[in-house]
Length: 166
Image (cartoon, rainbow, N blue to C red; front, side, top):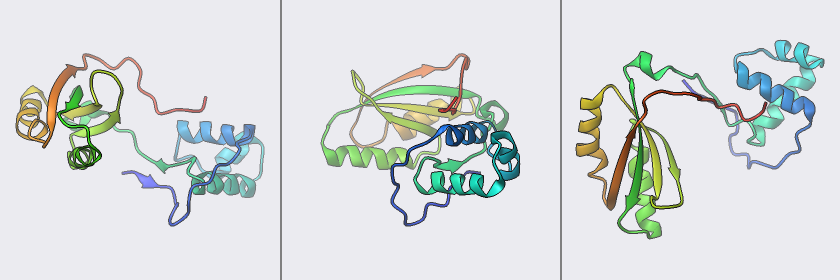
């Protein structure tokens, strides 16, 4: 279950990150459950400044949330599909309605607004081909203003990471 970093009612601000901040981020990316004490030991600081740095990065929006990464094949979501989608109409309201519809579909785990021949790229997970077919025909293609959908089936995952600091 994802836990959002405490960022209530605070407007994200831009902050400069030094080498220690980047080291802390790298450690948290590797293990978000690492304790402040464990991180402090590895970056050679006491716990208070490490805690303060983590809180500052949470409040500024550098750290968006803490999440558990789940193996999709072990939770009956063995089929991964990349869907390229184009809309019939490209007005602001049409885009807003499409995004709202996509956000309501649990099977869509990622959605990107892209350039080129298609307008959006979706990452969809389903149990199998039959369940994807049902999703595609009865839910995805029924979204208002849906133009063209091209499905590409993932044969294997070569690299999958969320680490942005290395």
